[in-house]
Image (cartoon, rainbow, N blue to C red; front, side, top):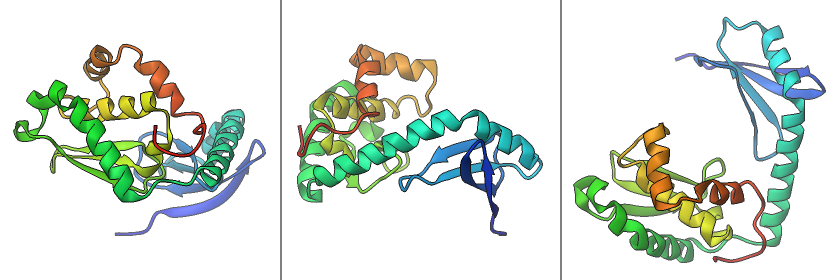
Length: 193
């Protein structure tokens, strides 16, 4: 399989790496190191990608500020050890499990894992029946942690982000939008809430 083609480009005052791959839309993201990456199909003109990036220059600036704030907060508030984080997340999952037992694979408590994820707060594997959480999640407020746990449990019944999925999240946490917003700001201090 051929490697995707990449090129460094500049648009709207933003330097970014353009990667050509099989995608439907133009995708734009700011990486953990503050660099900017865009991906687009080979048939999309580079000028169209440049225009897309330029139109989102303000968003890129704000995203870089969030990345910098998160990096500073993480440096000030070191992550807990994996064993401590795993015990904490397992206890949180066990507290919510009774609400989701009927949708979990085999009706059993899912396996819980903690990983050093940088782009996600959590994930749900339907195939293995595993809920995995970012080590960084343990530094966030308890309400935000609960939101991620409920979000991932809901994926056992709804593996997408359809209206039915969000309705399921809302039935358990009517204030899920406010809880989700907490994940967009750096943690207030060290430790597990």
